[in-house]
Structure formats: C-alpha cells, structure tokens
Length: 396
Image (cartoon, rainbow, N blue to C red; front, side, top):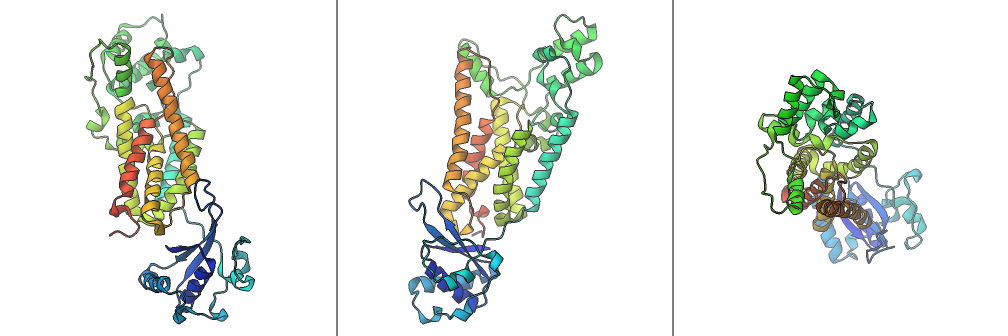
C-alpha cells in the first residue's frame, strides 16, 4: 500500500477516488481525526487516500499531479454509478464536520485493514518470550535471604543469561567454579574454606573485569587523586568468537513487566517498519541498532544489562524522521505518543542523574539499573538511519 495524499477537503478525496475506481485502481480512503494536542490541526478530520497495488503508483502520481493542477478538469468528473460499493460492515463512523452527501459518503469510506505481524517481528517476539520463560525456570534459587548480601551477581544468573549476555568474563567463571565445587553457602562470611576454595576466591579478587566507564567516573569524582585505571580486559567472550553476544542481550528481559512493555511496543512499531522495509533491510536495521546500543551500554556499565528497549528507541526516532521526510510512507505514530515516550525516557535519565549525584557524594549506593546509554544511543542511530535513502520505503 502507498499513501498518495492527505486531503483536508473530503469532497476532493471522493472525486479523485471515484476517478481511480473508474480506471480500475484499487484504493482505500480512511478518515482520521488529528488528536495531537500540540498540533495546529487538532480536531480536524483528514482523509487519507491509499492505493493497494504498487504497480499503479506511477500512473496514480501522474493523475494526481494533473488533478492537483485542475480538479475541475472534465476528465475527473464521474457519475454516481462509478463509485465503488463496499459492504456495510466495513463502514467507519463519520464525523459530523464532514460535508458529504450521505448517500455518497456511505459507499466510499471504510476501515483500514490491520497490518499483519511480519515474520521477523513475530520471530523476535517469540524469541524474547521463550528466552524469558526458560531463564525464569532455570534461575538459581537463593533459599536463605541473608545470603543475597554476599553473593556476586553472576551466581544469580540463569544459564541462558550467562550464555547470551554481552560478556561473561573469566572472573565470573571463577565464581561459578567455586559454587559448583563448594556450594553457595561457603560464600558467606566466617565460613571455613578448604585451601582450594580460598585460592579460587583470592584469584577472583585479583582478576579484573570490565565494569564500565560509569563506575570509574564515580570513583574518580569521589577520589580525584586516584589514577584512572583502564587495565580491565574488555570483550572477553566476543574476542573468543562468541559474536552472537553483540546482539543477544536485546532478547533478554529481567521481569514480566519489562518483557510486556517492550513486546507491546515491538508489535505496534516493528510491524510497521518490517512492512515497509521488507525482511532483509528490517533485519539489517535490527542488527545495526541492537549491536550499536548494546556496545554503547557495555562500554558505559559493563555486561550486566538486557532488554529490547535500545532497538525500540531506534525504531521510534526512525519513524519520526520518516514521517518528517516522507509522510507518504504512512508510518503511524502520533506526536502525543512520541511525546509520552520521550517523557518516559528522559524521566528515567533524570532518575539516573540523581542517582549519579548521590553516589558521587557517597550519600547512597543506590543505582536504578536503567540502560539509559542503550536508550540514547539507539535513538541516535535510529535518527541517522531514518535519514539514509537505503531505509526508505522505495530506495532512491
């Protein structure tokens, strides 16, 4: 489908649509009320004209150019009989502000068909759900609550997350070996340990791993005299050939709300992009934005992050750019929706900045654990890709 034009005058839309029907062009008219409070067109009913088949595009564009020049040209005059007849159940409710003859308007407007969920979007959706369920089922249980205070977080991870997080450094594997050989309870303070267990814990304490720039900045601001230390190894598992880790953190989620929120937006936004880009370019889009946002987040905070939201932020800014540059592509994301999403993102960023200030002044060790770097970097790359002709509906 292609959006040809958005008419402010429904009579002009009806006239041109009837001309297309006379010439055998399958089309669709849809009425939409502008509900964006910030828009100067708020409350105005617009009529969108879509054509169904791509092969009609060139001819329709030529006819529309002529129609725009002179809508009164006799060639565009049609009779009542030339109007298409649609089933009554497909009619949409019409606004009383539209000035059409009732007997004509009833036959020409109908609901837009629901866009199907594309195979790539469906695969992403099912992958996220399956990995979440399997991860929840295999996450180790901590039976003694006070054990949590002394347990390094790798012990709390499921095998799924250990295999799919951006990195799983050697230091974490040392903790896994310790728990496998001596049990979780031996990590408690004042617990007697055999020499082999003591050696493993000592090796763990001396094995550096990348914890992100964020902690280094906080530490430096707390103690400016301390030297910067960037000796920790980075990309340990990726350098060993586990390149899937570049993208797989996007398919992991921490809890049910996190999963539900991201999947709802994936369904709403992802299917629009897939329908317009096709499977190949949509996969490229997912890989580019996922790898970029994941890597940015890893550099900032280390490997302990997950979620699809970096890609979703890229999708949102991508659609925003395409709406500005090529409104005919028909992406549906209202300004009010965009405002809500941006408000949510920047609220999370504000929480992170407040937490950062509290940590710097050593008022609290609280950290919200929000992947704001993935959000912002994903949004940036989505904006850049939205400017590229390769990711337009019909490439130049």
